[in-house]
Image (cartoon, rainbow, N blue to C red; front, side, top):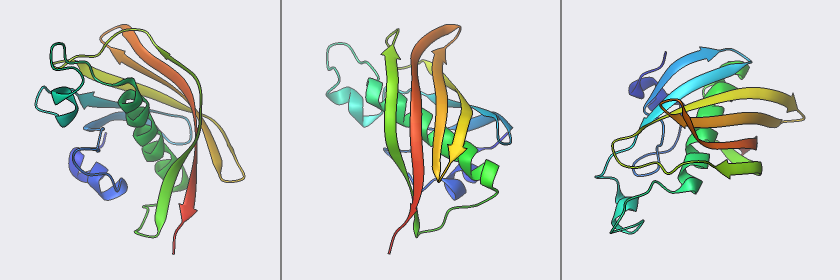
Length: 146
């Protein structure tokens, strides 16, 4: 378990781009489950779409990537500092199965598939209830910046 205060210490993201509200479970080096509460007062809904608010698919992928970062940091036993940036290196097989709307609770399940030469490969699934909303393979890497 990890609450919002612990998440804020791990991830550099802030409103409106912090997309993980709570970590429900983590198994070091293996998997993590986190959630994002989708709320009507988030800024993307003013334009996506005014007549029918839908949580953007790219933000579902970003929420899974932020969840994956929390797993990577836990696996390595590190807390990133201001000189560390965690980047997307690739997205494969992204599929969107159902729309996510305000009021939904998006639960992300991410497993670490491979860790080699500083590149992490994850399998992610985001669900609302028992329904899959999004799934993808994510590749991420950490870089030190000047």
